[in-house]
Image 1: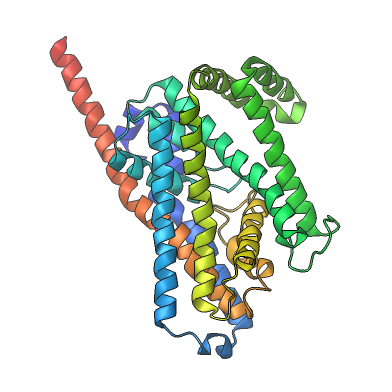
Image 2: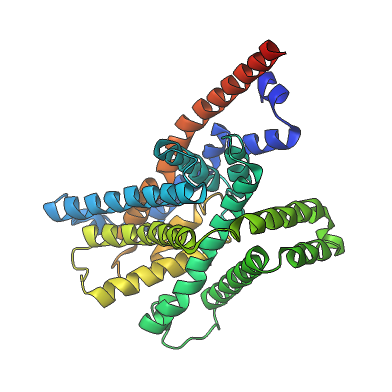
Length: 371
């Protein structure tokens, strides 16, 4: 890290900046390309690709998937604008979402980009209380979406949302266990933080500190204290908000996540022309894709890179007839929703850091002039 950054930022802030340095894109790209290359090399069948042709049908559905990608980004920007109470302009919200998505893309899926979001927003003249509220409440809204929609999807579609051949809700295989564990962790996390945010934040702080007194969790005690303090700060802020604030924040969250999965529906319809457009058929596909995301939510690789490409076909074998076609669609999907954010983030972040340093330099000059 260069000398100017070391002079301007604390050691903790420097660690955050290191986590979003452009060189971090190398590992996820290598993992993703490596897995795709291996799948094509080991299981390549020319017949899988013989029928691919860029017809009007393909153009329409790929264009529609791009539209859902844009809507998804705008929905996240809208949530940021709502939660910041319009302190950020639309252009600033769009820029910050690119940075937030980049930080999530280069972090393990189980870690996400919350630490980076806290740092980035704190540099944008947003109050500490509002910054903390925005990040904590965003995480809770995301969790509420999944915890709330998955039982509805199971009720409407049935157990097949977990695995194509699952006819009864049982957890006697790896995928069933993983889904149960991931959903339980999400529900526990969401319930605790919802309780802390809206009912009793002090009790959650005590619980977090108490948990880190266990010998093998002691190294996380400092972070537990910080998280507890953040929940208390966010709770004071959020309790004063009226219901339109919460409704708008949730609807923008639901729109963003829904578009993430519908986008993939469109890509499958584009390249598997026999795909039925029947509502229940498409809802079943949507449900499977949402379940896939939950099962992979605790991936150890950056942004699930490599794992998403490798396991994709196993989730959609009843929707995509061949593995080669599945690899092709998965690669296109990841290019649009993952690698594109790596590329755009690599362009935006250096410029954002440069502008941040320039602002700090001007503020120092103004302070010296005033004194």
